[in-house]
Picture 1: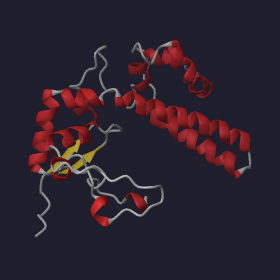
Picture 2: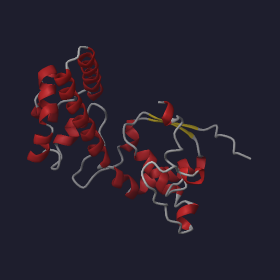
Picture 3: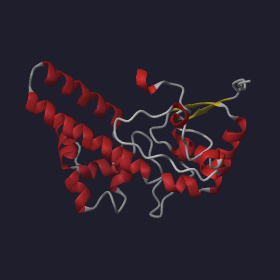
Picture 4: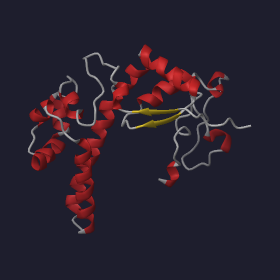
Length: 209
């Protein structure tokens, strides 16, 4: 018999990750703190990353009149930036402005990659944090419904860690290698290194989004 869903609900905001800290003292950012956190870190403020992000910083300066130096010390609404990028991209496509659409797409991709890379800096910290591991164990034991407003996947990481290795991994079975396009048998669709299966743990069906 399939177990009944838990009546417990955890509502998690961005503050849940504030217990984490990287080697250089960085703490996971709120939505308005991304550039403040990034530009105060040695890695993301290096000449290499400033050059890589040049298009993004030029775009922000054009529409928000904020330089990279100002972004380092002032809050900036990242959601507002993504919203404007999306609107301008769709407008350029509708008007057949191919070059503008391509440039906006490049800026959007660079910014998304930046967000993903910055947040990934805290993934290892989450797996090695005693407090986060305890929280993961609580979530695994309670098996609640989890509503999260976080951009990162830190909660997913601590759930995987707390749940332990899956029976598949403990049995020593290797994940089969298949040629691109080769059908995957049903019994392999639920493969996971951990007992908590991340792709099957979300409350949405990704093929319908």
